[in-house]
Amino acid sequence: MEAEDGGEEMNLEKFGVQVDESTGTKYHIFEREKIREIAAELKENGFDYISFITAIDRKEFLEVVYLFRNLDTGEEIFLKSRVPAEDPRIPSIADIYYGANWLEREAYDLLGVIFEGHPDLRRILLPPDYEGHPLRKDFPMHMEYEPYRSGDWLVNHQNVPPARRKEEK
Image (cartoon, rainbow, N blue to C red; front, side, top):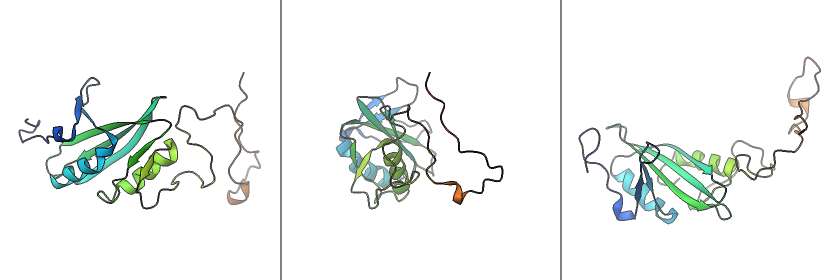
């Protein structure tokens, strides 16, 4: 296979990867157990930068999406894997790609993806005692907004009461 820049494209078929181009972007779809092998292979072949790790809630399952870049050639490889919504686990690659550490924590915090083997999997954006994962489709949106902290940490010069969500009609 030839890459867009004329070089040889990475061949991930040995990992059982399927290619999906239905959205206009080429995604390599893989089984979740294979991520560590694939990430190590990519790193060995010059893909030394991970741009992002995110997840998409599709109700029945979550799609965990990765973007790897080869900074020398500019080539990008998108990977995605489906994990069951009731068991959103996938192995961590934080020890292979240092930058994955915070990216995995963000996906855990907002969508509840559990990266097994992560060195410090805890919330990164929300308070430690926050309940739920706000980007999940089953997250309750009907509740009244309560500020996490009292106003003592924020100077309220105008003496305005804290914001509240509008009641559902």
